[in-house]
Amino acid sequence: MTEQSESPRGRRRSRRTPARDEAPITDPEKAREIALGILTRASRSTTQLRDGLVARRVEPGLAEEIVARYVEVGLVDDAGLAATIVRTRHAERGQSRRAIRVELARKGFDDDAIGSALDQIDEDDERERAAALARRRWDQLAAHPPEVRTRRVVAMLGRKGYPSSLAFALVKHLRDADSEDD
Image 1 (cartoon, helix red, strand yellow):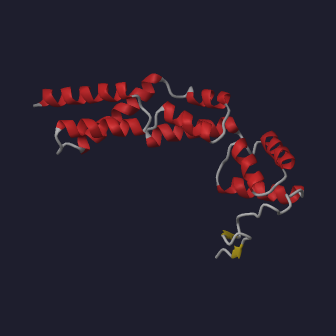
Image 2 (spheres, helix red, strand yellow):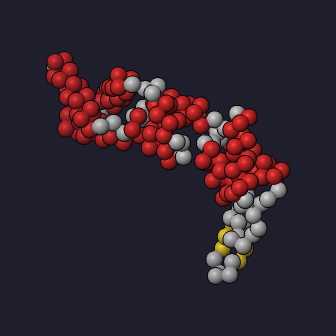
Image 3 (spheres, helix red, strand yellow):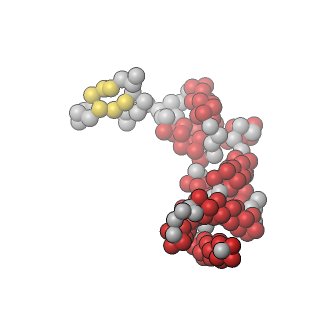
């Protein structure tokens, strides 16, 4: 599928990987075509679009112009995309605000967009979601001893970015509720 070519040091590189000595793309039409291709596959932040263009050999100044124009016409909207990511990560994956903040920062969103997007989730929403996740996992592990259940539920919540103090408090509540049922 991808052609392999011999590089000067004998290493192979795919056809998609541009050689370092290839000239940068300065044709605005070609650069716009690349940008639309990037945006067609998935929504991107301005930073991701700019980096994607530069990685595909578009001259950095031209990449900046294209990104600015796409922001102006609404093809790229960091605030809207950040808000969507927050909603989906919290509701569907059960991630905490802390984990979502890290993801948004990694994707290149600025602090203002991250902060306003995370305002959608308050402490009560976060605690509710963590409690629902903990309950579901606790019930799945019903055949295991309490120590194993505790360890696995706390670990699961930790991977989703919840603080250990919240995880242990929720597990304590679940253990207490189980002992009342007995």
